[in-house]
Length: 269
Image 1 (cartoon, one colour):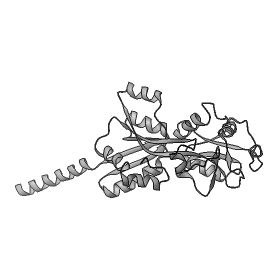
Image 2: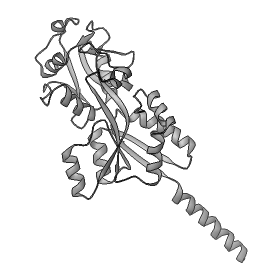
Image 3: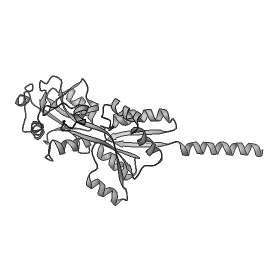
């Protein structure tokens, strides 16, 4: 009888131990980083079957908010943290730590039926201000320009606002969508549309256009010639530990950086 009790107690201990040591990571934020997170998470879980990784988008602002609120282990952001976010975090005794896991270009895109092949930074700004209203003004296929942008919680929008708009407001009548995928779908189905997406979202359904005569490519991002580029970040609540540290180390490893490239972004080394 005593032997049976010992066996039962050992079984319970092993079960509890397996539950304790099985890792679980929650990752939220940027839709630009989502393809990277998905690909690396799948590879990491394949190597570590006891680990469960939960992924969701929602935008860079929501990713940073999630680590401040403690609802995520990692917050993805396609821009650097803002000063007001730092202030909000430190007020709650949270100290976000950034890890740059990739580089990216934000590429203007149009419908494949549009004849336009390139725009200047000044023309892009004027289009998004509503000053240029018809494609014939910039050697495109004549017709009304349909401006498509991202919502304010988007890191992609934040970088576009800083680098292209120079802090000026996008035309109020712009169609706002919540994700890179939404931009792709809207531009692909709207002949007069213009939008902007990260490198990893370029495909045959949309047409990428050059900026100031420079194409948005990995090479031109790395050499600094493409004018709309940025770093992609994962933020943690303080210095990461345990499974969080292991996962970030995996992304920054040689294998992880190869997966970053497969996801359509640019490795940091």
